[in-house]
Image (tube, rainbow, N blue to C red; front, top):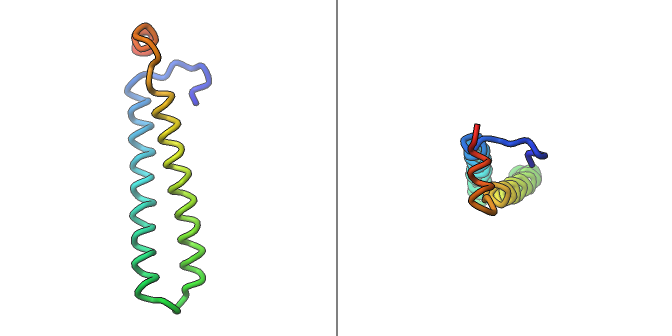
Length: 87
C-alpha cells in the first residue's frame, strides 16, 4: 500500500485506526437500516434495500482494507521492524 515509501509506525497505526472507525460507522448504519426495514416493511422498502446493499459493499470494502493493512503492517523480521521505525 505504501509503494516502497517508508511510512512511520505511528502513521500506519493511524491509518488502520481510521479504517476501523470507518468500518464501525458503516456497520452501525447497516444495523440502523436493518432495524428500519423491519419497522417500515413496505414503506420505501426498495430504496432502503438499495441503500442497505451499498452499506454492505462498504463494510466488505473496509473489512478487506483493514485486513490488507494489518498484513502489510506486520514486519517480517526484527531488522525490518527496526528499519521501519528509524528516522
